[in-house]
Image (cartoon, rainbow, N blue to C red; front, side, top):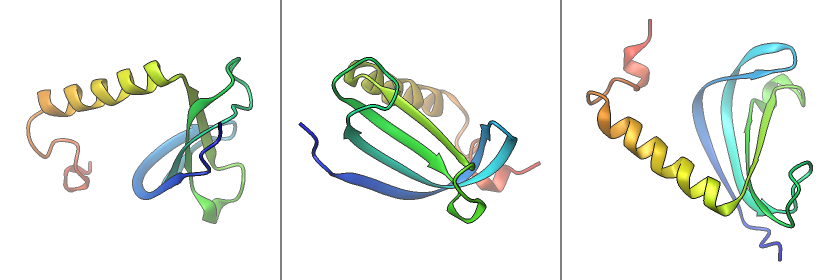
Length: 92
């Protein structure tokens, strides 16, 4: 069942698409029918830069178990790093 619930957030980072790296400014997270993954429903995450057009998008389709494992891995990686290491204040 599709929920049609889409959680949108502004983000600051980079993504790699077919034409190389591009700035990522937004993300959309939603549960829906996947386009490619062989499951009835997946958690879908789109990283995109709307200002750069439709080619500036990286899409991921994950099973519920994989999505929860990803959340756990992100939290573990951030908790293990020194505070502030992954913030925008640490630009090179």
